[in-house]
Image (cartoon, rainbow, N blue to C red; front, side, top):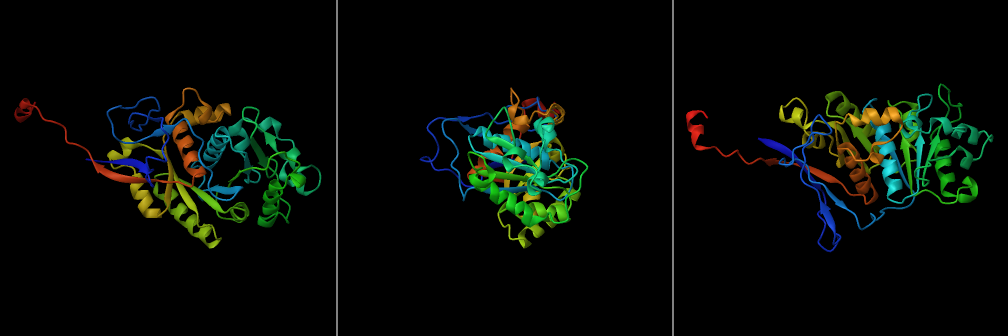
Length: 332
């Protein structure tokens, strides 16, 4: 019997690891978020409490969260990784680039506080700092919506305009904000039409969200090619809604198969969790839940890897055969 194990892609040296590292027991992802098996060897998780992740790359990091196919969890990923980065102490701006069908404000519980959007800023009806909605729970996290629901963008709005908005965030004199962001997360709309092109234009790296089904993987492969054509070569993958029981029953593709098919670095694996629906309906992201769910912990670890530009690798290991007792020879 083979099972999937997840390890950091780059092994950390003993000098790099902190002196106080909490290694959690090995749990198995299952269909129920609260049911897990302590004797399983499916996932290795190590949480480091006494240090802040080291920010890699030039600031600000402009990351587009995309997939191609709708309904795979792009907005959920943007909300949870964005708040995880804010909890780590980084200045974060999340941009909802889905025109007319925005949902990021709902997942964050900020839908009643969006008074201005980027369209009003471009038209000169509002300043950029007025369009930024600051989260009261974590003030270093801000939301910017492109437009209001059920509205259409002006004909002149495109990739260059969104790039100007991102560049304005870097300059406190233009944006009237006290601290420029260290991360700009762009929630990309579904599809590969003009909205997709607009969202990926300012980005210099991408997080591709996919699920273990063949339709999502085909769209993800197509989007990967489009990102590379646009000059975005730093593309990492998050596999969402993974169920180990279906993988063992060969009813779902394994994470290793997905990684070999797409050829992308693995940023995180998110187990299928019913808490996602509950948190969405409450406007309260998973990473803020107490006690944390398995999916919430997986998003936090993915955010940690994103900060340090790290990744993980799925490998196949052979499980130890069960010991057979004396009566097993008699069918017992």
